[in-house]
Length: 442
Ligand code: ADP
Ligand code: MG
Image 1 (cartoon, protein in one colour):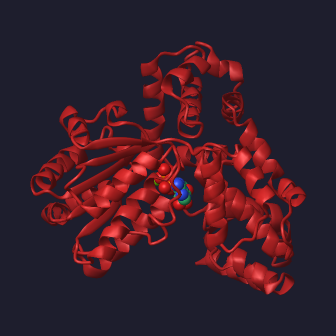
Image 2 (tube, rainbow, N blue to C red; image 1 turned 60 degrees about the vertical axis):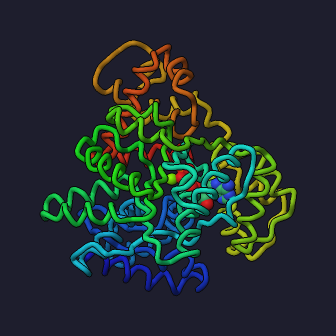
């Protein structure tokens, strides 16, 4: 493939110009995926890489491209999406065995109970998860964990699965996301393999489903899950679900399913307090073998409050710098390294989110807040609501107020609209990623 070859040629030249370690860190997991008339699309591990590669290496890379005889070509980095990775994984498995494997738990060993830091916001969720893992299906069934982005829901889900598998590897555990299970079902429908699909999910001992809020509007999947749920429940198998909102706020899901979600225990995870943030940073630093002075840790913990993934992101930036420049990091350096990131994070108050979204769509902040209802404005407004909800974790009511006094149902509708389109429309997904980057959330 042309894109792949060109990228490889380019890397060959670059590898001679920069040091080996740096090259390995940043380029071993990149791939030229497409060569268009004016662009070379390069896939990189995650959005953080995109930002880094653009800031640090883009100029050099573009120069090399020129040297190689492509003066008009731009390099565009594209993050590999997590979900796509998962999709690919399942796809591969299916291809290899052409039937459903019995044991494909899909668990990541990175997440366990030992490396989950317990604090006020998550102690209940942790204790329930641990209890469910210690005696599956006898305490809480189902266990329903909900909370905002980056607060550890997925972590706990994997921890439950890992714990159970470790104790008894004969247990049939499946971890899956709602999106994944949806894709699987569609594939099963197309290939007339619904019965093996059903069998797979009905004979598990422990079923862990992530992000169940994506179930809304997916009627066929709801129907399937309803029966799966009943069958598992009746035979006393453990079900654990996570969601970004409580069951009663998930709309367009059949009532009978929503009510089943609440048969067991519903617990929420809240953002961590300062001590917990410090503890998490210390643990992650240790895991990554990063040596950080106390004051740097306290500094980060005092700046990032609502999202543990962002805490990790700060740490990673520091780690990269420290290995890049082969220096220990002190407070002034940490401040310098994180300056942009933290400034943005601090300013990511509702105001700024609305401004950035408006600007992205070529509108003004006022357009989003007033009553005008052209298609474009409505869409931009909905995207703003989506961000306020998912990234600032604001309550619906507050979002309504901020967005010029809109009522609860308008807000829910708006957010759902974006969630639904996001799944179907690559274009919108790219927009959202772009806005995320502008807000430096990734
Ligand atoms: P969610 O699924 O709620 O969006 P994740 O489970 O993906 O969040 O967590 C985001 C990141 O934060 C993960 O890398 C996870 O390991 C880490 N994390 C979240 N909560 C904790 C915690 N209490 N202790 C340690 N790490 C945590
Ligand atoms: Mg998650």
